[in-house]
Length: 272
Image (cartoon, rainbow, N blue to C red; front, side, top):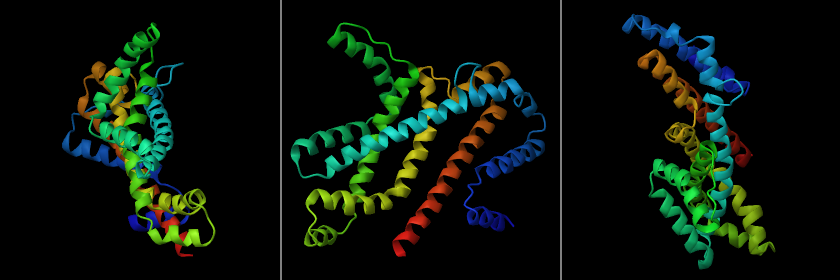
């Protein structure tokens, strides 16, 4: 039956993340009733708690809404920056290849939490050292910068690997048709490479979505931090963080299913 439901959503090209949330919430309630009859989920699901958890304080964006802002902005910027560094890393021109290698290897070898702290605390220090004025950056902006820097290094490696996966014969065939190197790269190589990168991109972006929870360490009241604040008031750790974990899972799972659907669609276009 579940297979039929899944086929229905696939047929109509509707992502069933809302369906996932409903099913998971039902399973969570059943699990609570059987295993933990003394839990108090009803104390969490109040109007004020849900509004704070999903949208933040009145007049201030926070919670899950801010998590999406952090993730989407960082994904967009890291895709652009990562593509540039990935192409530079693939290039044979040493003047751009060497800096790209240093950038990629440095950030990939550094824990994300360290990058977040470094960006948040380093900007005021550098602004004082070079401009003799102490610039203050908001925690949200600092988090976006850190996520972008960190993720772009991984995106760069995905781009480089995607370009390398294209057969060398494609370059030679394009040259025989009168394309120069730039035209070949932009119109023939990159489009094919990006199609092959889709699963790796989505996996990296799912990881980034989950990593946004680390922004709480510098005071950003995103989804995880909002849940922590509610827990500090209610002391219902199991109930709150079980719900938070299931929301993360539902969104990440939906993104993964979207990736599979997109991958199959691209394969059909290539085989057509």
